Length: 301
Image (cartoon, rainbow, N blue to C red):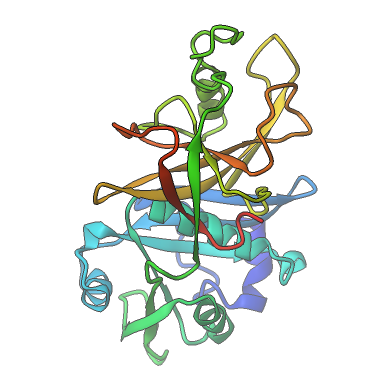
């Protein structure tokens, strides 16, 4: 909680300080769905969470402003960074991570900002967040101006890449007769990812290989897992993942770009124009099909 205290005089977040209750309750909330922290050189540098939108007057403002029921919304909450990492991009990476995961759950991202934190509101506006209303939550002190409520429209911060589905090495799925992992590499890796808190529930344990026709690399991953020791056949590997979505037969399917780091991957390299996708099962998908994937802006280059 020392990081929260250290940044509060600069950000004025939280607005009430000291808090009238333990700061642990402010950071880790009963409504929390997910949370992420950032580290710089092994030192805690920031935090963000995804919380449930409450069924109250606050939730009603977001619902009215977005035109969606509250169960279709995900609240971005408790975003703060240490004073030494302000303007270093750490806050932006935390924001992008939370947004990608909220969208990956099929929800519209929303948040609120006090007018005292005018700098934060300007950052959100610059990133495409749209002001949809004002209100006075029950925690707002008397005399403070109304709180601003925002949404992030579905088409903001997204880039689309279209490619051709191509054959891979058959190692991720285990389909290749020469694969050293008959069960498939992804199936073997999945429990090790889960041990790190990263889950692939609902996704097929195999990759869809999409050739974009030009060199591509992951620039700003949603999640990176360093030195995962998942097999005794070679040393640990580092994996990055980018939240993504594809449209198929009128349905939106959410998953990840799967990116084993080339510097730690021993064999079975993909052409530099191919990305590997972890998605739910797509019946009827064939080699040669064209597929468009929606990715967070700036996540690939």
